[in-house]
Image 1 (spheres, rainbow, N blue to C red):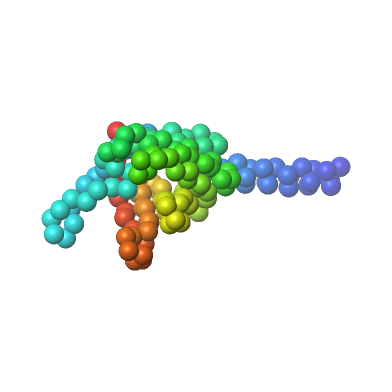
Image 2 (image 1 turned 180 degrees about the vertical axis):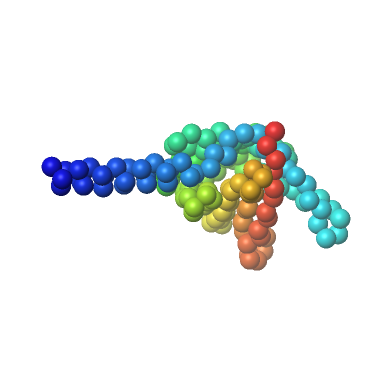
Length: 159
């Protein structure tokens, strides 16, 4: 009897720890507006998600919708670490992008691979909420001419 109680207690602790870990993941859902921050020369840079982006999120997926000069872009990412495939209009044709999302503590990182012409390209973007609830979005993408990847970090407010 005592042994059963100990085993049941151990299972309860494991279950509680897994529930607590699942609850630690932030929810990025909402419409986000870029907080323009001037560069050293006074210009205001663009954000990796554009001026506004809408994110919906449930236990299984994160859907990112943003408007660009080429129109609306919508991508759905699986949050369980499995591959996500999205088609994007690029340079007059459709390009398949294959992404994988991973959680690193409270930060979501999405690595995306695609090919344009004969160039294989990898982009990485991360999503995190700061202490005030603002979205911190970082994008790293291949620079022109084969230079080191360019990284842009932008801050967005909800609403």
